[in-house]
Length: 353
Image 1: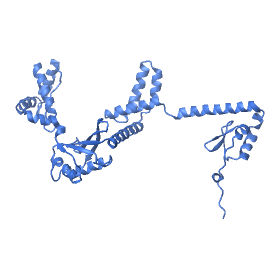
Image 2: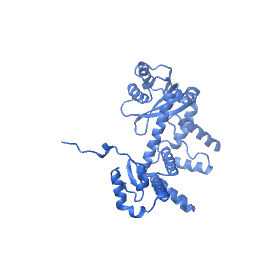
Image 3: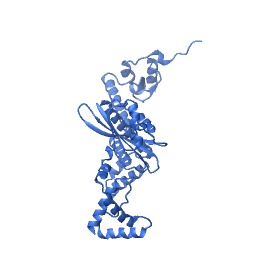
Image 4: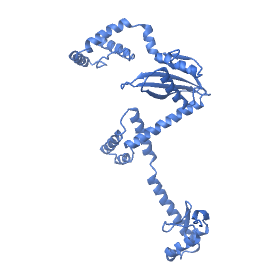
């Protein structure tokens, strides 16, 4: 049984003489009639001639010579104008796209829900109309800020930053890592990884490399596997010259800590701990235990236990004094940075008294 012949197998080509004879143009491998903007099914002289003779010969056969050539150029220019208008309608405006990215970035930094984009858009339109900038309000209406668009914009920005960090690590000479493991409000352990790199021109850059959740145990092997999977995406530990961790046993353990697993994997270079918490080390060396005990007694007398009335009266007293701080913070040994805030707020209140 003979196979059916395909038109693409014939490899027909457009002839330049058809433009002036039949007022047509080649577009995307097909023949386009410049008069009615209809695509001719087969690129064959018989089909093109039949289309012109059937539909346009009576109205356009009277143009000959230079008049016909001018007509052809005029039809081409009109087609070009139509295509540009369609392209402008389809192509998004650069200014609205940039505005959409800027708003999405601000929403991501502020930890706002993606659905708030519609509210921000309505607020911008309302402000433009209230201030008499109707043209600006109309432009605000064109900014795409739906929750799907904002989510897509944030993902694209994240991919861009990730590619930038990857290029920096691939082009750098050496890089160092800082690791810190902490627990969030949902009791999920999070491993924070920061990277500092230096290139051949001695340009130093610091970036946040990743946030790795540890849903089960937080042993040294678990942290090492999470860290190894992250760094492997950026080329491995070949250029790693320095690693800094916190003081947890799962990090610093000589046999089952992250440092031990890194040594077994052949990672060379110095590895230190607690340098990333210099404020905590300084506080332990200075030994302000006597001062903190007195401050904590005062704060607990105001806020500790069931002392809501006393706390409200103290806040009202600070409001009457017009102090810099409207309340005092509770100190927690886990959140060690709050010690400085407690001392600062207490000293300001004492000076006002």
